Length: 288
Length: 346
Image 1 (cartoon, each protein chain N blue to C red):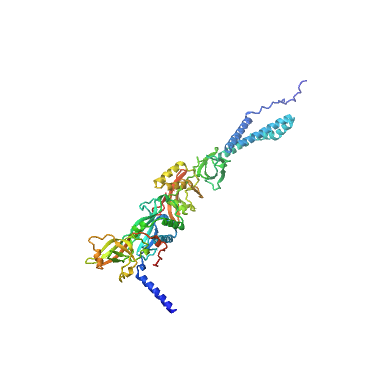
Image 2: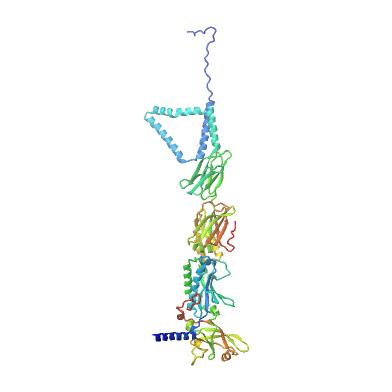
């Protein structure tokens, strides 16, 4: 009996150890999702507006979780440094007409950076401007319907590309590129996606240089991985697309003088089957 | 044979025939009395009104009376009928006439008739619209008596208030009718005062409040419509209506027809405010079927009305309008862009 228990304990410890040391254990960056009803017509409609906004934020967080696999999303979690606000406002914000098109603007608030904002989802066209707002359930169902028919491409490449998915990475010399601290499956990412690497090149003068790279597969080292490379085994590998001339990156990698500062996803080829059953983060930081 | 001798020392008797009574005295009084009666009858007829039905009843009674005389002739009952007429009509009438031609009754009758004609009059109210139904009331301004009331109906196109006390110099009364602005009229003796609704009494103004973009949406989301009137510097609430999720325009006061020309102007108005075609159509349909808001009082020209649409207490649209003499005042409500707590005045 004790022998069997000992074996089980060892097995769990081994699995845990492998998990901690592999790319799969890395946590993707998390983003707080919130909803703000800026149009007075919608703002005044609900007596408990904050509750409605919170429920709508949950819908958006769920949508993003299923469609943007390289980040994690939590509704109204103020502990996250990045905040994605969906603001229901007029398409033409300078207009005061009651017949204006209304939709969701998306604003990304970043620490120490200016916000990024764009108009993303039409909610009511000008022709629908006299349609009643409806009750809470109707309103939330309408958002759900709109989200079901909207792809997230513009959101991924227009706004979420400014959220770094990681602040670490393993530079690789041959071929020149970076190993991501995540498996592609965990990112719901297919090959051909592109990322931007912000690398710090050491030397007499330390510089931060951005490089564009394409995801070409998973990292599988030849032979036994080094202690440094062990955590990245199985992670996605992004090959640098075009080396600048003169090439400072290659010699810096060779000298182990490259430090990956940030990795951004600039073009995302989504793998929907991988993220289909994901749920958004629980507020407070639970893992999915 | 010679006439008998007259006793000595005594003048003979002389029989002198009495002089004939002067014919002008009684005849003149009869004429005067009949003139008083005729004037009184004309005066009564003027105030009672010429009604064919009453005239017909008198004519039928006269005809029956004549036929009965003829029948009496045929059956040889002339003398009996004559005696009956003499006993029951001619003799009393003659007696009355003789009595009335005396100085005191004649003068008394003249004074009474004159006094009545100088202090009693009538007010007749009729509608310019055939078949109109309206409650009408008449009250003296210098009396605390309850107003006299009657109702105009399809079968009763005129209402007559009689008797109306007045003075030789006239007395002021207030005439009021449903759907009309109450008006004061001076009632003089002799002639009846004729009041025509719509001509002498202006139609009470109606106000049509048309909600616009925010108002229509708010009403469909179960907003409230409220209307108040400015009185002595304060807003008194006239009506409050819970839309219950249905948007409409609102008419305060009597319902008035909406012309096609108004619809054209509304369409232009909506287009000028940037409403796309679908929204424009919805606005026109909404405005075309106004909801009548009942109020407990009449509106008057120069009243100042405030209408508001509120959703959960939040002011969505507002309109302030001073009433004019126009029968239908058309007001487009507007979204509140400035401080909603500041209420503009007329």
